[in-house]
Image (cartoon, rainbow, N blue to C red; front, side, top):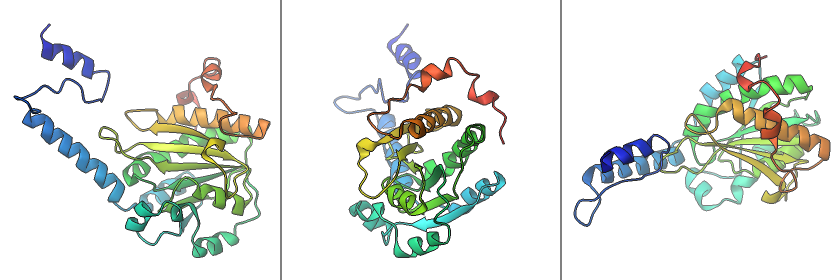
Length: 258
């Protein structure tokens, strides 16, 4: 087997940039161009504004109500420079949610654009769809889906506290990598309130077609939510042991969607 054939065989198992070769003391032109394209896709994922209309339509098809909210950030440039503002609701959003506060749902799902609108567009609705059978099976109450623009993860703390949710799940576009500009993250927080630390959350990352499937992510999220409600906590004290439960249950794909 030649060197090129060896690298081609290894590339079947990873999207990492391996076996790039060289041309003199530099990388080959083809690899330089591939890197530039990957970098451009990552920048586009960060800077392209989210289009909520298809997301709203997808949620409506699932029978779910959605509400648009936004953080205290004025524009995308401020979002990148002021993470603190992305963690707080705008005054208009608090007023918008006031009419829906008091329901005290077991789970409040927030979809935030984060650092990749592409990730949200591709993965948010399928991930929620995969989660719904678990919600129905466990009898959890679900609040309206909040669609948050210019959002950081901790925005869910204020929104969840405002809505009286027992748990909040923030689905958010993750920081793009050069091989994964469409990766969605899911952050689960028990008893959300302003001031929660990252150590008090559980994260499921790399939800995308080339990473963790929507069904696998939903199974993990449902397991964590069940344990969070039972134990009254999330974060470093709640270890993800869903793989042990998965061995004893049918695969998520076999679950009939509601």
